[in-house]
Amino acid sequence: MAGEVDVPYLGSIPLDPRIGKSCDAGISFLDEYPDSPATRAYLDIIKEIKKQVTH
Image (tube, rainbow, N blue to C red; front, top):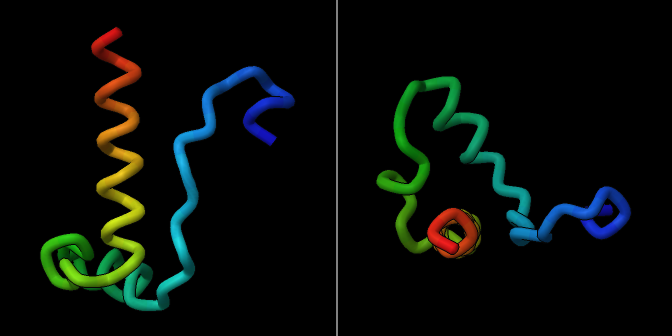
């Protein structure tokens, strides 16, 4: 889909029901579940965004 609208693909985040629960509770999912595959995916996407905005 990203290629169809000519924007870079940043990655995907695996589904984790704790993401929604963290949002509802107002707590950081990344801080609360640092070992989650979803946290790793978020951090990889953040890293990719940083690379894109510094070029």
